Image (cartoon, rainbow, N blue to C red; front, side, top):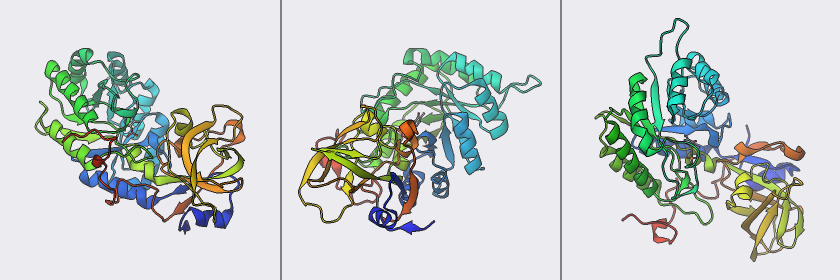
Length: 401
Ligand SMILES: *Cc1c(COP(=O)(O)O)cnc(C)c1O
């Protein structure tokens, strides 16, 4: 595939009528190498953050060998793209047929659960035709933890409560060849303290259970950079997690895992949209809530933007966006800071959309097309370039030192 220098070059070459997705393979590879080399354990890529078949081989080549999959469709997708990858089925509520296919056809051995019902389901679905129960199950009990330090909560839906964790761990230990504990602190955790709090809860759960633990999986939640959200360096997260992991009462050879989604792929994509109409400080653009901008619309997430038209004013103003569908909810409050004289026909690049952006696109209302191009320039922000000002100096960071 031809690699364009940047978004402006793509606009110059194709003047697209539809939104365009830009891929930055170098940025995804750099993020993956960072985790593969610096996280003090194994990093699984959480596929749901961006299941693009062109991203998976980039992560694999950069050293990511394990993949957190949540549905049988994701199992098949990753197995097709990466025949040698280790797949871990980390959704705590699965169908029996998905478990069976994953175990017998795709070699999946690692499954998560948060209830005795799910445990029974996994055991039944992995029993062979002669009635032999699987002897090689690697099971992870998902513990419910707080999401209070994260921008997007994952606390209410999954995870066994601390009081119910010891009996579930004991019961799971009976059938598991290898037993782990996992959790998810919520997405975009703005301080490493989120993991400290969760690991404290893990400590309480396993101390009461009195079983041997072979693995601790601290889940996803590692942040990326967005306007108004400047997290501390990821090295701080890794160091603090490692310290608290080492202090847990677990097997001496226990493994440490994490499941980054956002942090591995946020920098991979940006999006080119066109302004179709301007009304005051509202811009009607050709992508939105049902396209790659779900989070901008539904949770008011802010993304960096730049105007790609030449000769616009130096002065800037705050803008809101409307997406192309007829739904009032297709509205993105922003604010998005753009030239005061931006107008219909101008193209805008919206950055940092690799996580939960391109993956969310639907065909609602007939809008859903988006071509993709590779570009060579840097993402609008990066956690991995080593040239970021230390955000511990700023106000929105909870300091741990
Ligand atoms: C979504 C998810 C992840 C990835 O979360 P990020 O916040 O994108 O890092 C990891 N593990 C599980 C179980 C998930 O559901």
